[in-house]
Image (tube, rainbow, N blue to C red; front, side, top):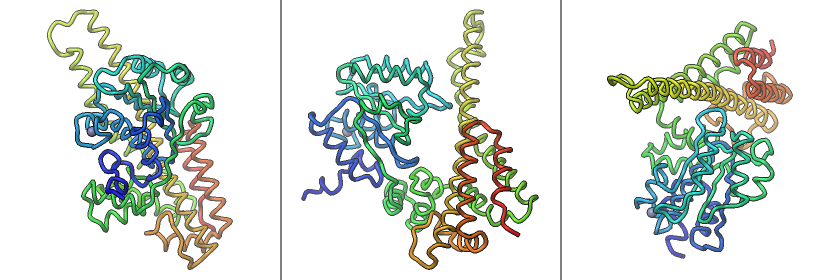
Length: 393
Ligand SMILES: [Zn+2]
């Protein structure tokens, strides 16, 4: 066996804990017969769908099949390669404008690379209009064009059946904690003990693990969320906890938005020459339109960031109740817990609410996630939830 067989290296180092997927994609890069023009990357959040798609795009453009060091590899991974178009929705949906970008991008011949590649991250956010544009392109693909769509699941809500049936499927799994810890140490230089802890606490989400390892605030906000279940001893405590959860999510989203918004607004103003002397009346009104458009996009993104942040808290909470459930069912067994560092809390919860109580609370959390998805006001949804999570007297 050569070293290449055991460790592909290069761009594939980015794809954490997915040996089967890497082998499949490498085969498509090396053997033209294994290549196809439409790919669908699916897997749970944090499993690295778009990372795998980018690595694949880099390997396809790289003269050496993805060494990770040449210009083609580096620009493809960074999203600046002329023949790798990344569609990354920052709002709630991928609409007509992005759909046009996808289609015009695909119809161009590769300018320098070997392929014209379009990667659509969060393709589940395509509007019907955008999905139809993509479908049409997949049905009659322009030569040398490769489309990679990334979706969280194969549910018809996430991807049209007609699109799915025309794509080659790449299924990522939740990466194991030791693979995540390994990449944190190797790539990000995290201390091994911290890497092991954050990998175990991340629920198999590579990006989350990296944040937990590097960011004290991320660790504090996870702690605040996991402290909630044992706090819920009275109605007042429930309402307080709802306030805290909504407030923390809003604060996190506001911070993330502010960081993104300011730079974007400045960039648009600069490109319009706002502040410079003597722009024509037409230019000024065009500029106002562009700024308005930008504000709309930023608002949509802020809403999504807030939702994502609340949803992450809810997933963490559900994980703790699941731990309580399994510990109550099989005390003392060597179990794979969602929050191994909070085992004592999960055991106490199990004692106080029992398996039935844990199940009911997991259902309540699911219902709350659905309500938020359907635009119920966060404060209302979270108050209903924390009241349902209240501990028995
Ligand atoms: Zn390369």
